[in-house]
Length: 102
Image 1 (cartoon, rainbow, N blue to C red):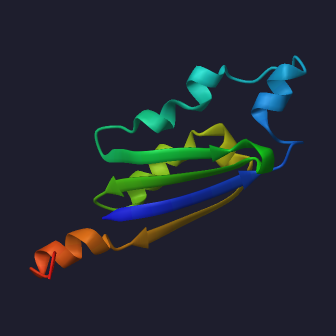
Image 2: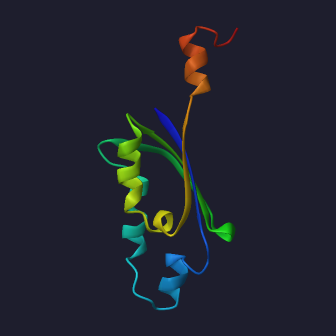
């Protein structure tokens, strides 16, 4: 199953900004570890729109609980709003229905 994730935090809760000010936050290498995925969740793409402190990701997993577990440790995700939507892969569907190229 494919999931589309959108998350956004504010500059007040941004761990990158807090680190820049010298506050005690985990290093970026740990905060963004979720981008590598894990045994249960494949990260197909992860994108940042830093001006708005917004992130987008496309994930593949068998169920929502695995996605939730991966994202629970992600700093920017726990510091603001998050939307996780299951979506259909329309390209795969079209190929499955043997409609590709017709």
